[in-house]
Image (cartoon, rainbow, N blue to C red; front, side):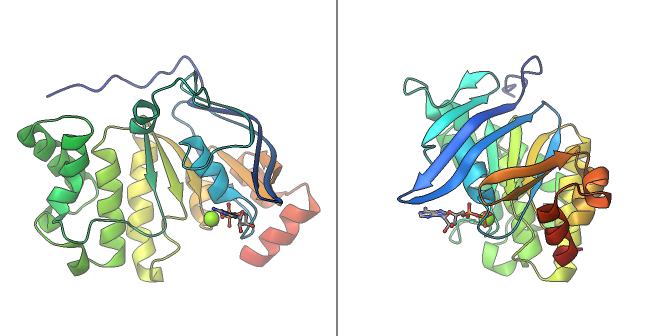
Length: 252
Ligand code: ADP
Ligand code: MG
């Protein structure tokens, strides 16, 4: 089996400095500085419209920043010369909507990009897919179509698909927000196990329990800025800023 290059641990996984993003007249990110170390889980919370998704999307350049710096494993990803596909292959992303290909079985959903983007053989891609389906508890759904899975199963399949690309880090944008409450726990359990395995993760979430128990850092964003960050237990128990307090009073 092809061994992916191990993640670098001598540099931060993600280093964001002075990041600005504007859509027309709307300045959405107003000078974000944030470092995610290898193996760290950083949770990002904040009101709707505060720029959380835009921040995450800038990290793999689904959005073009207006100005600032972003380094991924030491590489300046805003350098026009870089091979963006190579950078993106190291960063897995899971969205609120699961985005599985509806016309493909779970197995094919997990193998198609491995074969097309990474050039893995059918056998190797399937072996990796099986291992990742087992990891998320979906081995019995390998031949099912997405429409026959619950929302929670679809999201776990989407996570397994991302993992099958052997990323060094994972970005999650409200991965449980579209799920019925009784399906949230299974997805959070998978994410917790992933964190325990040492995966570097940036997680936008409204699940404060997850942030408290799994997060190494908690970042509170409001109006395009990081208002407060620190140890999740400290931030949740003793928020220092009025805006953090007001937000937590609504969600806790
Ligand atoms: P959050 O994820 O915290 O809810 P977003 O990053 O999605 O916030 O959005 C922040 C702001 O940026 C909002 O005002 C939103 O309308 C705006 N925005 C996001 N994406 C786009 C886009 N592609 N074009 C124009 N405005 C956008
Ligand atoms: Mg969002």
